[in-house]
View 1: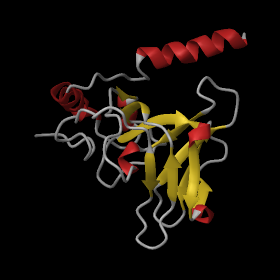
View 2 (view 1 turned 180 degrees about the horizontal axis):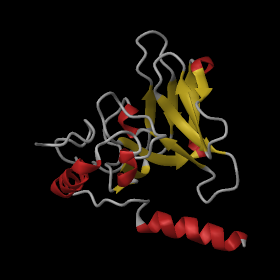
View 3 (view 1 turned 120 degrees about the vertical axis):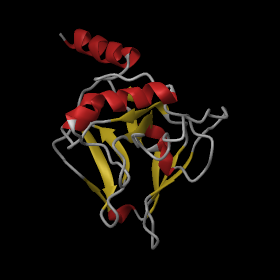
View 4 (view 1 turned 30 degrees about the vertical axis):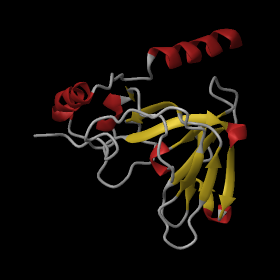
Length: 184
């Protein structure tokens, strides 16, 4: 049995062409889609198993990266955006019509403040950075995945060549720990 993780990686991780400097994210609405300009590539792009990230129908994982907040601008139909959970550290802005998350901003003191979380699969242009790892893999159990298939999920990540973690990758965990150490 082949596990379907996410449509963007199920056939393997495509190599990015390099030189991608940004593009436009669009929600799934046919009428008046929300469009967001990102003047940056997706940094730290990864498959995410957390229960908060938006996932397309049938996907176990999301594909999410970050971009500098000052490089993210709502272009069209921003009146359709609403924050999913105002108490969450990442304030995810989703289209109220189709439910797609366009960006998530951290406004509280945090190591990642100044970076907006974006779903690179929503870029209308080709060439964004490919996912480089999978994070919060065990969290898919909280989202309803049968724990008995976790070995198959990890094997699938190995098959497509993505290292996987039950938290973030080591450089991002180091950034979080550094931020925490400076605050104490």
